Length: 249
Image (tube, rainbow, N blue to C red; front, side, top):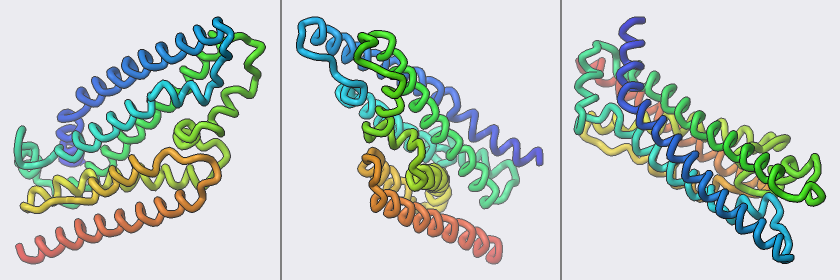
């Protein structure tokens, strides 16, 4: 068990501080964008031009773009971990005398956890912006349902926290799992002189189809199917490949 924990520590040490720094940048950048958008909306309201509703303000602030950039950076950072270039983490993992399959499993779990943390930070931050909106605007323009309705009406907010839409929850869970597997598959392939393209496909798929309005069942099902198919392909390639290598050895 100590060897397995050593693998996890090697993987975590190589990325955890960079990921924490990324979260700080995410919070600062989105806070600045939302601040400017909210102040602009308040100025328009003071000028008698009307106050933008919460979901419109979230869209105009472009915080979803910051999240997308951080998501891509996260995918790149996690995919590089364990590759046999740069800091030579791949060689270090080999010296721990743990099978390639176990390295892949631990790295997949860690990767999925990191993507989950990114999702959690963004969701909490979005909720904090909603609370800030309520604190700043005229109470006559809001109600106890303002935040609740915004998470239904705004496609980005709803995709982060789907509330009662079960298909979106399932889609998000499958995405987190598949992204973790795909990011772990990239260094596994790289150590064999090959390229793991699944993480590229899944990252692109997420960027294009993540933000969708409520009721987009067809979109959710499509992503579920593609996530399951990609995850199955990664698992088959990894475990069958490792078994073949052990048989040859």
